[in-house]
Image (cartoon, rainbow, N blue to C red; front, top):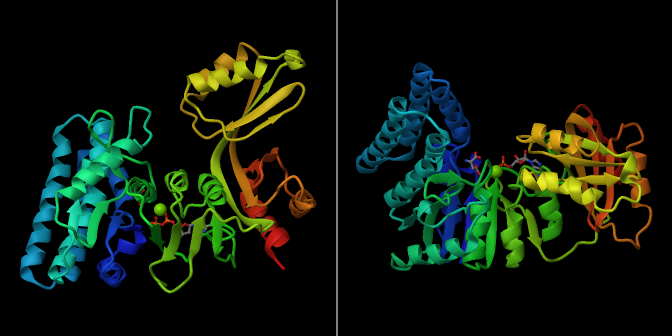
Length: 438
Ligand code: ADP
Ligand code: ASP
Ligand code: MG
């Protein structure tokens, strides 16, 4: 068994949906995980915003516009009347459901129910398309087996048990289709794995079923050495270790959901990143193999806040760091980077929901300074203690970039630096020139 996940662009139009058929129509069994058509989840977020603000008129217009896009898709996708009518009824059901939220009070639960509609639509439309072509497939409802616990983390044991039960409901098939991104929470309500979460669905299913390979099909030929949205002439990295891929995903390489590498890594299942528009391209293979390249790739994560906690009494004060970290733990706020000196410690966070209370509590034990609008730039490669010259090369490249924090030595394969977001582009370009131009 394999898992094949296709992202928003790969299902983004009737033609794109048709182009998936040769990629899934082979005798080997596979689970096909689909995202919503590109743009849909953003549209659904906007519709939810209108409902929140009580602007029913706006919500209605946005829903009508989205529905007309889907009408257009089904007109192009189906040739037989029977399948076109089935798809039309599907749209009616989902859009009526969404319109009905106008009558209701709107809370985060309603919002999540709306956000789930994109994947429910794309998977059903693809399933009907295969049926029209006479290709048998099974539509597996992800809400029957994908689940997050009270800590909002996926519950792999539950997923493992329940996806098997779900599969057992059908005679063996070669194409199982299911929704990415959506799940149920600990209270049984519709929920999701956060934006970009279809990748996570794919690796969770892959891990649950211990498949032989997880394929993430997208609109680019693998993980590039730098952010292709910002830097020109980037190139695909053919092999990455799980650790390297996890760092890049977490620190902003949008091609992968931030935490999706973990389930595959835990069960040692290779992940291949492939391009739907260029299926022959080699892509990137993520596995246990470490390439040993000195510099593999860089990525950047925005929206970072740095907190400097300064205490004159910190010198020799054991227990001080524990007191600091306990504050972040109390407010469930993960720390990304840390640097320390004798008199101060700086940490970075990206969840600022509880920033004010955190700062208030820290001020009881120290002087606190907060810096916003920062980016972490993460350089991934091989930096074991025995290798020399890597730091020199990195910082030589960055000679004209103002740096706020540096983290080296936390792991053998990551060096992170913190810069103002206004300097991010300059940083990525400088690293490209300094580390990757031979
Ligand atoms: P999908 O909809 O298939 O999930 P995404 O838009 O989430 O696709 O991810 C693919 C995009 O990620 C690419 O089009 C590219 O612009 C962006 N991206 C950012 N950093 C990288 C990187 N290092 N390598 C490849 N793509 C990247
Ligand atoms: N449709 C969701 C999103 O746009 C999930 C995904 O595409 O991975 O975030
Ligand atoms: Mg994505």
